[in-house]
Image 1 (spheres, rainbow, N blue to C red):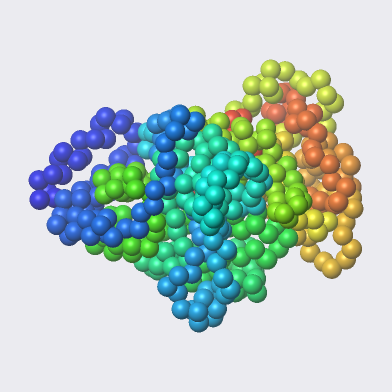
Image 2: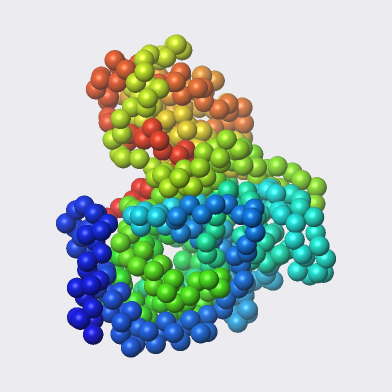
Length: 510
């Protein structure tokens, strides 16, 4: 039967006009695999059997106040710390997840598959975001609760999946089409079904709270190890922000594993993974068998390089609120720009060699220009030298917004000395022209020449750190852009969203 259906299934690419022989081959092979799954008795048996037993929730509501349909498929994926069905010994000794469930969303991501099926966008939402929570009926008391502000992760406990969806829609302006809820058991089972996933780190990662103990380099993690990796919050001072970045890196690796491991091209493997995954998650009632097949069909042509990852930009990482404790505040302007790009279906990252921005091409800046190297060719590693929670990620995001090629992985500065007050720029004297551009953006910083450091500058942020000057002030004049840089660095796209990274950027080296 698969051979009889194959010609019809392979006619679709002609309508999509997707260029490239390699992607055509992947599309054809993937389509054949899904055709086998969809048309075989075994494939339909799995889908029908799982479909009948899937735990479904009424998560997607109606109403005239919902955002307009943008044509894309947008999922709200939440991770909960639900422990039901997991032995206490396993929770404590294997997963390092003792205690009781908070009945809240531990992780929240908005995943959008573009209308043309060519890209995926993943936006991580900090769980402590202080946002507007719509009016709702309280799950515990049954009483009607007026709209108020609170932590976004609490919406799930207050009003279940429907309130979590409505809260995300109201604060992002994105229409959520489907809801997927993953607990500890679902996550572990999925990773094990794929045969494990490789992760990489330039330095050892250790967190006694989650049980993570990862050496430098590349390591293949099983389901339990992967859970420790994505749950770790005490690796450094970045706390939840660092954890979200590791979750994005893991998801990029998961995409790479699914594609390179032959899972999507082997009906038997695919059936086994679907059986494991679909029996371990909760989904909205509208995600039926046909929608699941369509979802799988959309994923089959994606790789890590086809996915963009971003985190909602923040203006404050320790906003104290009575009754809520420490919360984080969104950068309203940056968040609006991010969600507008997602809503419009625009890529969040650009080509590795993008043209200069229109503002830069228009003419020299009226501000003084220091150095002849454009910020996009200055690579920066941010270190938190003040011990202020979240400072490293804020500095990294602000420097990236100013056009610099930051690594996206800030960490704590080494040493046990006193917290730094003044920000320091550490640089190799051989890159004396590039450092002028960085120093112009951070005029309050102290310069510290470090012979042999190499082309990546280090910004050690102190408690007196001030945001970079206007990007135009630190940009080189058009004539200077033609000058040969000491060491070419990655260029930034003029339309890129600050802090966004492609899956290929955050994946492990091939």
